[in-house]
Length: 361
Ligand SMILES: Nc1ncnc2c1ncn2[C@@H]1O[C@H](COP(=O)(O)OP(=O)(O)OP(=O)(O)O)[C@@H](O)[C@H]1O
Ligand SMILES: [Mg+2]
Image (tube, rainbow, N blue to C red; front, top):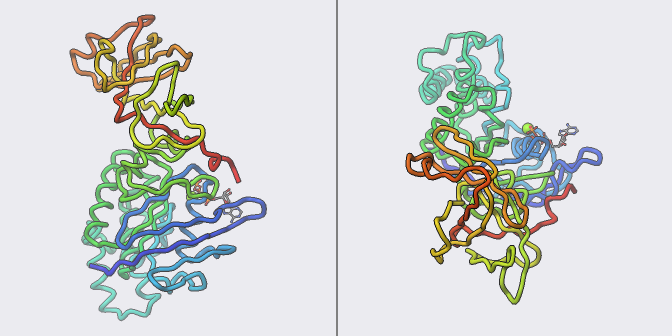
């Protein structure tokens, strides 16, 4: 097991002309943690990874690996393994040649290189493929070679930039589990970049959501999903409808109804988050654990294992609810034009502060 290192990122700024690629980013990554940077295209994910790898020098701020400030340290002296989005393999070299490259760069003895390359090959389950040329490999195999090359010198930090984006869905799902297993086995502090929210939730110990170069929220997948810190996070991760609520005598009110809410009520303006799978169709208003939203069904769509019902609430807000297609549920679904009572359990009634941090900087 490699001795992992924590990463301390403080007030990192990187501008390109008028673009704030990174806008005062503060992030503490724990030793041995699998942390994912998640954000839309152009949000600054690759820039932050390149700052960690040493290929991009920030305008200001500090990056420490353990106790060591690394801002001025060149990439090959940072003890960092990197998997690039396009693999960046050397096409004229064999698989073994590619994987051994970082070791030759570091002046490791030939016999030792051979042994460590073999070991890395078996770690990524490519035993026996060392003599193949890169252009004789499938996408998934190339991805594994890139990974083996990143870990062969036993770095204490592993950086991956959308490593699975070129793979088809099935292979991607498989590699997600494999990468996660490898992380558990090696225990390397890992920073992973993706713009795929499902991938981020599946793989990570914590997810750092960034937008316009700013860190918006960094939390566990569950917390990010259940308690998004802003409308941007609520909309970017999962589906949700946000409905502004009113305050009255310390209560939170929607359509004249006092809501029972879970967690803290944020100061200032906020919205109720309605996630489709958290809504249920209630037979009546009797269950006191539920907030009830009366509406009219607009459409019900059967999707195989699940169904989606679209409804419009009294306030005119359009919402959707998703359910699992069990026989009885499907049989009792209301049809178009019918009145429904949509219920949201108070424990899933979460308010999202209306933040201005989502605005472009
Ligand atoms: N070398 C550069 N010169 C000028 N602008 C750059 C450069 N590199 C990045 N940028 C800009 O900085 C911002 C952040 O880019 P970055 O590549 O970090 O985004 P990203 O989150 O990785 O996006 P994607 O998901 O599309 O890969 C973008 O607006 C981009 O255009
Ligand atoms: Mg990128």
